[in-house]
Image (cartoon, one colour):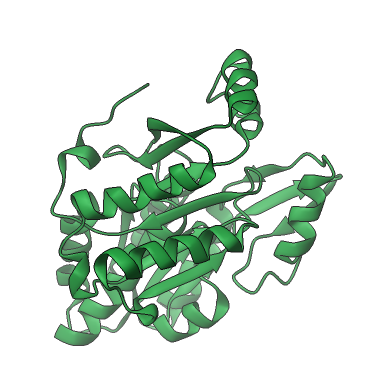
Length: 299
């Protein structure tokens, strides 16, 4: 049986330590600010999160680019030349062309290396939700010594049980991305309205409710853990992400510990430059394909 690696892209929002512990290969997306393009690597070598958030606060525009076909081809071919197969788990196809790029590269390489397996999965996920999928995949592989086909089937079977809930503090960033109208952004900002959003069953970012004020919105995230999570009181792992709002992370951690007795070691938090602005918070539990994850509600 050929050995294989797990490959992904940097939208998984795993830091370098987590990447090393999981033993996965991460290809970076890129972003451009002030005319210069930077790679979004797990070690933030090109730009620290602190510098990024300061530039956003100063009003600097940021554009992003997916991992392209050439990047995937180069990275995948090096692995295949070592005689290993590849399971590639990509950023949601509804939000990026990264998945399509991986598919094109994989198809080309299958012709050149017919004995190899290059399996590409659309995670329908983003950020730490995608990271949670990878965490669970690696754990399952290590515990059960799965073949690449068995792990491929496992990952596909749990995608719809991944739940990604988050809030956005500044509606103007969503306005610039065309996700809310200028009027809604203006009124919402004036009233302190915080949209509670999730990644739906088709991998899209979908608003599902609204809350007045940041703490109320964060409590709504924790409410969702109680509503749809699989026995959160039994210390199921949860990944928390934030963008320049560590105080919100501590508040959410406190609520999770208070309501469900979740131990600190099961709450892995990470600051991630999400490239859509700052003060974003999210929590990623998992559930048994809850209706709220599989039936998107557009508000």
